[in-house]
Image 1 (cartoon, helix red, strand yellow):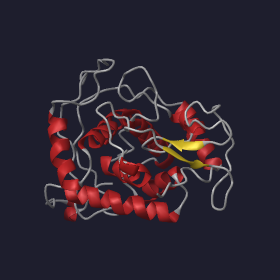
Image 2 (cartoon, rainbow, N blue to C red):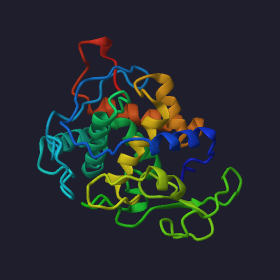
Image 3 (cartoon, rainbow, N blue to C red):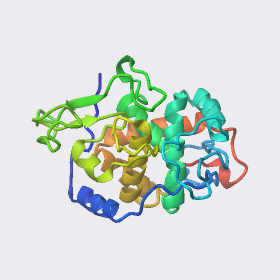
Image 4 (cartoon, rainbow, N blue to C red):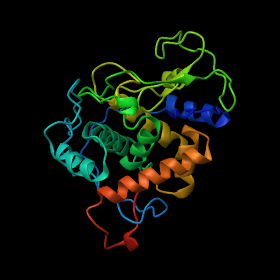
Length: 271
């Protein structure tokens, strides 16, 4: 089993990202699903299909606690279709698409596409299905996911416990946690309640996908640019191999879920 070393090299850039996250407004601005294409040919030669307009509860700006997970809606139907084509569990794809929509409303200049979140989720935990787990209806894996102890072994950064073992169960060393593999120290800054249930839980993919979206936007700026996208992914895990893996899977998902080549911009795709 391969456990990527999430944020294995924390640098001054990570501190800068955290400072930016502290200053951001709440992400609980729920608007209509954004489907306007963003051209970025460095990921794939097809535009990845986007969720349709509408379908998000509270699209007029009213936030309803516990009701923000998409269910019987146009987005749910899109997720069933796109998930089948791309090979992504529907429940995971709903979380990625919801994060794209809400971050798009809060930070339209970021231009994050759900396939980037899906690429990370695939590399980190197979969308919460690693080791035979299943992703439950509440967005949590059937068995909690913990990475290896970050104890300074070869090629592993040493990060001593920062949360008393509250999130990762380890009172000595930090471990990456949940489907998107956040370390407790980073979750303390980037953690988000993505489904409106009043909790910020890194084991909940709704929360973790939203937090990852915020983190990537803070790190990369405009993710429709090559430089922004690379900067964002490398801030998540500073590894060229990780960058290649995420790029390959994001491109695969965007292409597989596309309804077909576009007639504009030479058929180029989104991140």
